[in-house]
Length: 231
Length: 309
Image: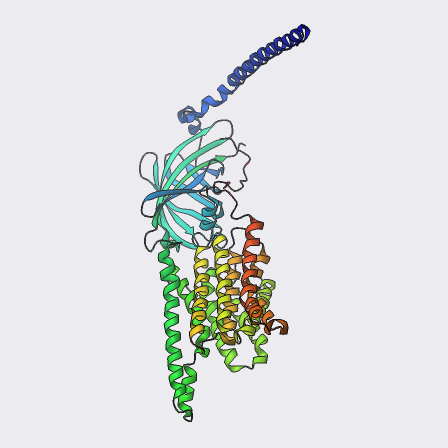
């Protein structure tokens, strides 16, 4: 290899190193800038108490439309007499009426699309949608319509309502915890977490119950977030 | 699937059918061996003939399997699957009546009537319309005629072929996500296997026209329900292929085939079985049901535009 070639290569390497250093500095500055811009947006999400003053602005019960992205329904059932198996429904819609601190006027009208059942396993999802379990094509949705509510604790309510599942309607009591209410620039939002336990055989879903392969008792946890549109 | 379910829902009813069948065979033989001049006894013998009760024997295993998996019966049923045992029973009773009280030349018309009556109660979601019922009746008729064509010539082979076809249907139902229906169709298959075994040992055991009509209507009804509740997205024509596969048995009646015993045996057993297996393979390949990774499930669509975590 000639001297001229080696000198050329050194120049190229030197030039490449400089370019690399410059790019790195620019990237670092860019990242710092982005973090600096992003941090003020992330800060308000932490404490619910920050937005507490917004609650005082409410006069009378408000109707909230369920935000289907930030709401979900989970179910838990015992499998083979051993572990607790969890699944979820992704499509949830409806509305609820609420005024903080008051059980009067509290209403829930929630609809869950059964074919949105998701267990992170395609085969299991198909089986759950089939008439062995939910018969999603015959009964595409399950609904909960509240009929009455009473205060059980400071932030906890016992909500009685009609649960329709698999074509069967039964009265159930859900323990509903009020999670918070705030307006962070996207309209007033309120959140609840409801829990109830049902016997699926009461609703005609009996697959696997005879020998306890799949538990009859099902715990349902519903996380709700609803919003009032900005006027 | 648990072995326990297979034993209780599939094998136990099939065994019961075998016992009843042997009992009927024994009574029928005893009655025939008595003096034929006594007409009263001959009528009693006809009442105990295996041929008369064959349609009921065909549907006992699937109905028993259905009630084992879903105890109790609510009237009116809310799902097409709930109506399935009613449909099977209508098919069996219809076949009993039409076969014993009509001429052989009327069989296609009789099968159409039975198929329409048995499937009219079924309205699987999405495919419960009049055109679909017309297709179902047509498929059941072709299928029944095909089975009846060979049932009189090759007794055990016909039953073996039906066993294979129903087994394929059971696999397809399982792959579609409907386990209970899969067990019911497996019971239909097990029943056919029992008839095949019995036919090998007892010459009087044969499916006959009534049995052929019942089996065709039962298989078509099960496949119709399976297609309605399909969660795997199998093409509709694969379900039709499955239900119509017994019709290929009629190939055995062709002169070129019937003159050669081995070719006829293949036409009776192989052709429907291969066609039914082909339907399952085509369904799986086209829908990709078995090739999707288990963790591919995606949440269904949402109407909200707010997708921030």
